[in-house]
Image (cartoon, rainbow, N blue to C red; front, top):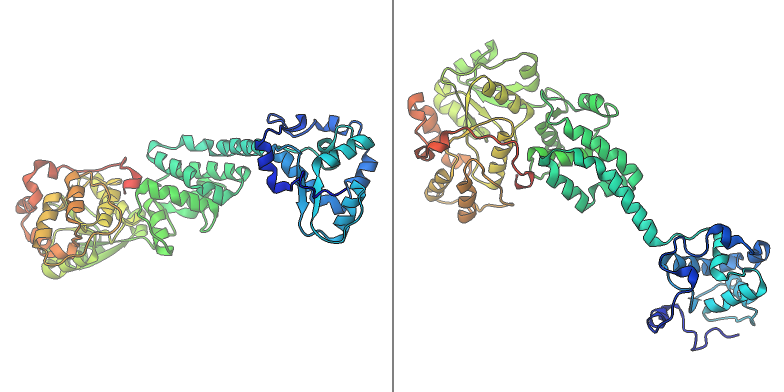
Length: 481
């Protein structure tokens, strides 16, 4: 019997035959899962011993596997399957089953209807090929059913995410869309405890007062090492922290430490510091202020003895983004400079601890930063923790600085919102120019050198009464920051 006859084209032509009107046999209908008769029925009447000799030959394993694949996809058991380069054992097994003369070369084709008929007529499997395959290898589950079951399991794994606050809603949507949890956990079974632990951690953040990451993990998770670097849970929680605190994109160990610290989780209480000038309240601070020299405070010093710094007599603390501004103020004004705090980029845990304490005790905080998208993100991140007033940090101030700048670099990076002055984001987008703090250093030093009664009116923005209102936000969209 030659199975390469034109009337029985190979497997690759089945799509045309199905389109011509062939229908699936009863055991391959679309609503049957697993495919074929139920296991108990499939084995009824099957001569398992003879079936093992006929279809269970190792040389026919490829054939049985192809049939199972079709059944799993819900395709009819019609047409042919072909092996392009069979070995001798595969060729002999097929020829014994089909009872045809051996061939020494060429591809090996087997018509499914022929095998089905042999199994029925011989009495080996009265219900045909599908029942024989199930009896030989076990139930066949449709791929669609498997996919549906797996998706239901993933939905159950994601369920704890509904317990997060609204400010993390866009993060939840993002990680479901980009597959972060699936990449970290691989299976729904592994994802369920991962998501549950991440939700528990994020609901407890930001930590106040700041604490060591290991201590936080021991108190809120499975143990002190639960948030160790490189673990799936640490990766997932850090992703949520970026949304929660507005930390911009970055990489490297230093960036990760700053991102953790933005939520109050620290490697230790010494590595987080804040740069200050002319704050008083301890003998060491008083000595540095008398000399007009900058001082570095650690988180340890700020949390072991509170309060550390006293509220200035003027009630005002100026905040800058870059150390060059504070250094120039110390050089130019020395002990006469009003109290200052420098963030040095994203607010550290030490900076937030100090500024929260000062704000709680009535200090008025004035903030200035770089006029670029990164700078306004830092300003927004600060406002999530403490209220501040803009210090030459409005649209009017920016436009004035652009006009005065001889040369300035172009803005880069994605835009960000400026809720304290919505016109500032518009002006940044229109001008497309980056103005660093050092560019307007002269104006900032002039403000710092004024008497307190004069300093309030130093900014171009002070013509607008609303610019002196403190601004803080705990609900700024994390993907705008």
